[in-house]
Amino acid sequence: MEILRLKPAYKDYVWGGHRLVDEYGKDFDGEILAESWELSCHPDGPSMIADGKWAGATLPEYIRNSEEDVLGTNCRRFSDFPLLVKLIDAKDSLSVQVHPDNEYALINEGQYGKTEVWYVVDAGEGAFLYYGFENEISKDEFRRRIEEAALTDVLHTVSVKKGDVFFIEAGTIHAIGGNILLAEIQQNSNVTYRVYDYGRNGRDGKKRELHLAQAMKVTKRGPAVPENDMYPHIADCDYFTVDKLNLDGVFRSRLGGCVTKKSFLSILVLDGEGKIRNDSGSVDYKKGDCLFLPAGSGPYEISGVCDALAVTVGEKEDTTSASPK
Image 1 (cartoon, rainbow, N blue to C red):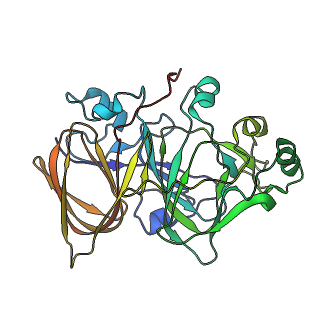
Image 2: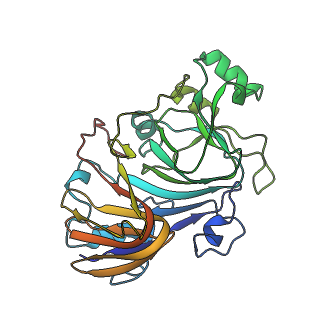
Image 3: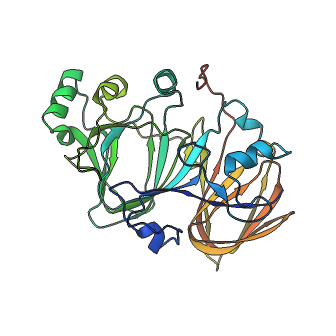
């Protein structure tokens, strides 16, 4: 089965910049490009096949119409495609927000909740993010600080640098600060509850909507607990496994692997260029490309220079018994 290059869906949220166009070559002609949804089957922005036999089809169409099981057996426990991969350019700070877990989201939103991982691709001097609370707080204090616009005083502030990784479980309050570019691998969900937005106006000149009632129900009001047992992976949970790929072109210019029938492989190229090949042919890659290798496509080899994230779906059991509406 052939290797597919994907064309992302684009989001022009008000806090975004232009680095994904200037530095990653994204084909977008607007003034602001906040997010590119590189690997997506979500109806709010599915990615497309860029070239080859399936050029012009959306990723969901390709999956639905393929004669083979291109997702793999590990994905069968999910009623929907399980994950979404993004590049995010935060020129300005994102809102302070929280995502619900599966149980709440399936009942109230008709889609899965959102657990995610951030890989910091680049960060400017003094860049930081909010990650959970500094200490445990009561529901009453949480509500009061939201009303008094003093919520950030009790959030845990973390300085960030290139290569940092943050695992954000559903229910963890968080916010990406300005001047940060990151890759996000998350559950296939677009449910976000905005808690605080710095008094910022949207494009219509009005304050952006907050979701305080929902946030009060789903937020864990304590410090975030970093996951320290994911080695050798960058992240490993029920919805995705993320590994780092690196070729320096000198000491290591090739690496290989095998895509079994258990899971597809998605490769997000953060830097570099080269070629990836399997038994069906080869594809040139460059910085910003997202490649999809179907489950069961067999041995592959990557050559050149690259800094990339490899995403698969591991062998875990989903404890969620409900399914989206």
